[in-house]
Length: 245
Ligand code: SF4
Image (tube, rainbow, N blue to C red; front, side, top):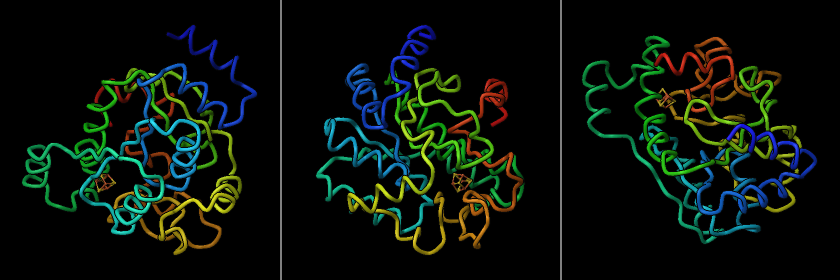
């Protein structure tokens, strides 16, 4: 597989995001899907896919703690593009056990508890879905966070054991919003209220002018910890294997 990825990286290195989506979509056929959290980048990819390859599966993780504005966007997206969106939920037994032992707002108490919550509500449902795929699309960009430096547009996802395709990896923020305005792509109302990055409601807040775009996520933690475990920096892969995330 690594040889295939290297070949794809070379073959597609000068492709636009749309060309990359089209070619990898064709290459993996029905064994690739878009994981959307309805962030601005995911909305760009949804719009591109609906133009290029409307049969591509779009799925999302409903952690049970999302802001109302995200559910509203989910509905607007579904209607705008006339697509079905797979909504994945965490295992209720795991949620009940976690909340029973640590409380509803455990994530504020320690990094360990925050990662426990992300693992139950996000990582496990994602792992279940990715197990049936050979590749996944996601809207990560290198500029978003120090933890995403060195992000490749196509790479092997060691954590989940499949190919990860990030067509916007090298896009600056302005390009994302230029695209959204040009094609009138629906976006989360929270973006207009100084939320550049949106996750679960209790773990996201607005940022002040000049602050890092991810500073509103898990704001009580230091930047190097700000990943939920869905997207690990290459150097963190060992942590995943050791079950530390
Ligand atoms: S972002 Fe917060 S509420 Fe959502 S899964 Fe992670 S810790 Fe839990």
